[in-house]
Image 1: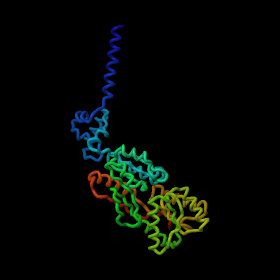
Image 2: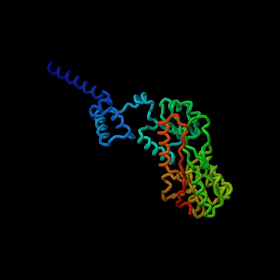
Image 3: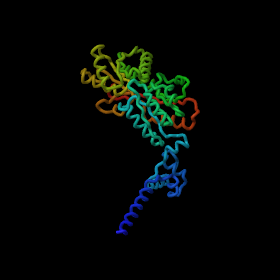
Image 4: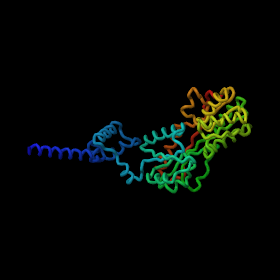
Length: 360
């Protein structure tokens, strides 16, 4: 009996020792020793952007998995002052353009070794003060503000070394306005060229009476789009567009177009501030008003989201190339981290018209 108890006791201690060893956190030095490489090589293996022979990276990562090793990003951040976190401020996460851009951006950031922190504004496009506090606590390397109403002076209060990036839409392909004393970088979308191509196409079909289906009234992107449309139409001798109030959503656009035609009468063409609004306009024209597109009314959108080429819509639209836009954002982040004291940086993204079946 004593023998049995002794063996049971020994077995329990052995299990406890094994459990302790399994629970003990592996280190980069342990991985380096097992893989017969330097500690620097281990760090490079976990950085997708770092140069390392594929077979060497694969061996290091395999041994790391066997040892249950993962890099301690918190410890690394204390040394490098880099959190490898990028904050993204958005007004919406479920609309087609935003969801597609967030998906593409997250994928690109992960390929560069960054994780993404997503922050959403209130419905009035302002930022909750509690979220701003959280943002500072994460110490992000960069902030991308797709919600332009969260102003640089607001972010300057809560960010340490991170320089925010704003997406802007100049009405013409010209140098952006000054940064008003707060350092921030820009991704500037030159929408004038694409919109001028759109109006030239409509004018070629004899269109005279054009409605602008707007986005959210508080959106600077919407304001810039309307200003550009007015400039282009005036330059082409077409007068002012009829403004139809939307909010970038399908349902609001659908109702707004029905009201426009029943109250103000028929227009020759509709230029929508985004593609989702254009979809609402198309369905209103076809199913509520009994009109044919493009024979009775022509419709043009803006963005070229993935659904725009679906045969049920086949939408003519002003394209903002998503891949080009994401690559520009990544360049801004990496250039700023490489040279934190640089003057404000700007990347430029062009637009162009994609002609499909809603004009013709």
